[in-house]
Image (tube, rainbow, N blue to C red):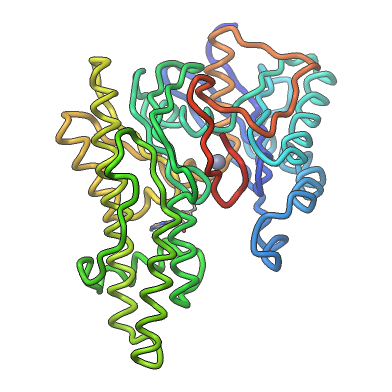
Length: 364
Ligand code: KG4
Ligand code: ZN
């Protein structure tokens, strides 16, 4: 099929129902529409995403999102070349809703169907936004993900390591909770941290003494909890200046781990002698200025380009799924009515399974 290619993308693997239209114009693409219907309020009372509630909401919203995506792009299905859908990993009820919706559209309109790995959607986004050339180094760092990948092609990913427990965004959110700061924790902890002393508390930097790129963030919150309880016992409460020091010291520990592990990831990446070395960071935590500056400095040290897609394309969306679908389609990938929804689907089939999964459920 010749360019331009226009794809409908569908995403429903967690708590965002999304549909988007993306047109590939060459090395990169144009987002014609990008509809995301979140479910935050549906899950708010439960302290996490409830899979059954999520699946039902996806089933109710998918058709509407697809219709809106077509409307906003000013297109009908006749102008679409194929349907790309997240086929995993994620909460199985939601993934099934999306896959069934996509199959229905493909069967009804005779369009080709392409199943997409949700993580490949995140990992290929820097090609949609910045036309990065393969291979590039990628750090996915959000409330649900934390892993280093070498993206070698649209379907070849080498996972260098990842969190074995909490994702950093999750750690920021838990820290905010422990310090009675509002959610989402990341931006609020960051704001407090700017006024605090990052050396006031020596929080742990787990796994830095071990080789490789695996990380751990769950011990941080335990250390913080202990330190907080001690302060509360001594002061009869948590004085604001100490709270700021907690935030700054916590942020310094996360930054330190991500920066040092990025250097290790770079050592492995640069061994491939990439012609145009590049480091892409995606996910909500990439919005953190201190962390971002630390990662950018690492890229600079290795003479690599640094890029971070805009936040709306880092959080779950269907434009990334449409784009990943286009990339897979170009390599000849096609699916049919046997396409299965997969709760687990590691990007790198050869890497050992990660123990950690992040707050939104098992991802890899
Ligand atoms: O990528 P994202 O929007 O959603 C998923 O987790 O899938 O990431 C949200 C996470 C939250 O945990 C939030 O606290 C964190 O990213 N976050 C931040 C900042 N802004 C958002 N963490 C640290 N600093 C920030 N400025
Ligand atoms: Zn995601």
